[in-house]
Length: 108
Image 1 (cartoon, rainbow, N blue to C red):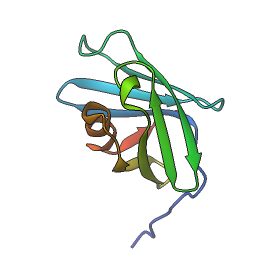
Image 2 (cartoon, helix red, strand yellow):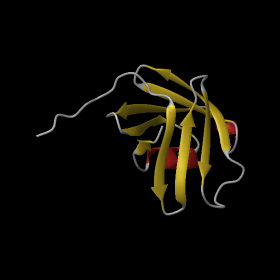
Image 3 (cartoon, helix red, strand yellow):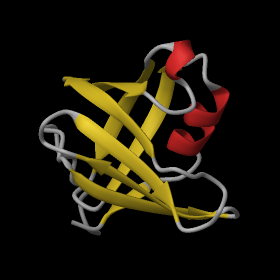
């Protein structure tokens, strides 16, 4: 049996998730900015925002579609390959659904 690995330091980079609307890419830059793109006409232009990590909690600030709702707060886990989120509090349903519906796979 392979042991489960848990990474406790947040890993900036690009993560992908595919659902019925297309392939999403969420890129966390080391300067605290993020972009969210999808390879369909579902969302144009790309979403842009900021994030802040405090231990196992991440705050997502969306400048695109959820800006008026303020930050979304999530807990996160990363096993070295997949990044998963659970909603703590977020008034923006679209952001919460997209962020938490599936694990995000690190691509770079």
